[in-house]
Image 1 (cartoon, each protein chain N blue to C red):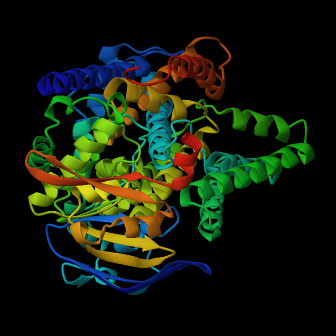
Image 2: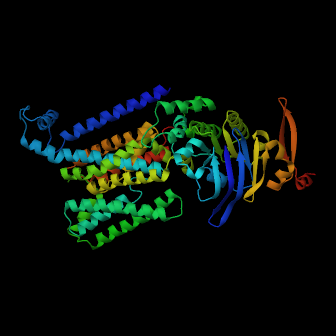
Image 3: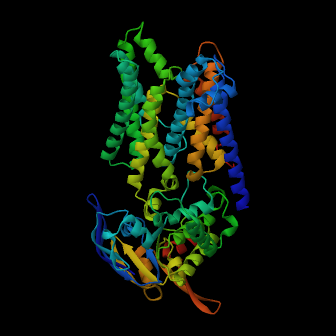
Length: 265
Length: 342
């Protein structure tokens, strides 16, 4: 579904991505981990062709991103930003409807078909109760649900999310990630960056770890995300704990660096 | 609930359209030479199908109507609609509700052009053309400058617009300094204040084509204008060619502003205040906002122009009146937050 070959990108002389390669199949939920400045956002921007002066190749569904028009691009991959602070107070319905713009010819406004698509997306995310509220009048968690609904209305099968939970409280992080997990189960291929390795342990099927501009490790979340890898990514000792929730094993991690324990004792 | 909201918008549009029509009818009949509404329709009908109407009216009435009053009403409607549409488009494009139709220097450029033409002794029509050309040139310059800058597209546009504006207004000040104080300086000052009192049929003919070229694409693109107001990355990934869309908006809004200013002189506040009023009444969706601002702006300027010509025996320049009416309104919006709710 997604294939990236030897991707290299530099802002002027500053190298941000160095020979990144990976391949992801349909229905995967990929967590992209890496410290600040590792190049996660730049990777996403290249994949969405928001940046195009890169070396190497990016294929979405077998097609080279460089050959795609904006419109084709929009039909294949949707982007969900960290958060969106709208200047104008559009209704939730109108915001979701914006996702359908790519399928319209430039001079057309959305018709019954697009409104139907937006309605389906709203129903899928279960946010019908706020469809006619203003986007500035709902909470950050709800707004993130709206952005997901807009991506669904775009009818793209690949969703690229830049830290979709960074501005959310603990409860909303879980709700949004559950919704994302649900979308992957329904066939969407999802790439999301996160600063929290627990998100990767708990929700992701595949992990792509980036550090110092290149791929540090990648593979099935259950196999590669070890205490050692987390230590290498963040430079911090952690303990990965196992527990059982509803009969299935769930892993999580806690920081366990020596100095802190000394301070406490 | 959806049906309710839609119904309320529909009702507001009906009220707005009625106000628009009423304002036209009132503006046509009132004035120093007042006509009855019946005479107005009879004169109009006699033009459409001559021979059917008995000529019972004063021949002077016909002259006043066709040479003075109708052109003036048409000009007020067109200019009001043009400035409001340019303002609402720019506010979306710059994602800033505080910018107005002259953000990229169209008005100051036009002002400079007019001042220069007056200084060089051009006739009335020459002044309009110079104003129009310099208005376009100022924006073109600002746009090209912004494209050369490595900064964010919209930020670069605002900054280069500011630079070009201040250059041209300095130029205007210089022309005022060297202008003949008996004759040219008052003419420049009066022109800059903005007025509709000397509008002729040819002025309407002059501005109608650039205005139509500006209005039609904005009306057709009204849904896409919404996508200008969200983050650039979002609108791009949704499938919009944002740079092309911005260029279309700049060209249309500039044609509208330059055409309006070149005929009327500088009329402030409309491009800023009308979009806000319309957002309060009709929400944020450009599908409604574009027709609403056009109608509201047209009606507003027509009514203000009626006040301008009726309030005192010596006409008040309309540029002053719009500020008198617009400034308190804007202040009110600023203090109450300006949103539709909260």
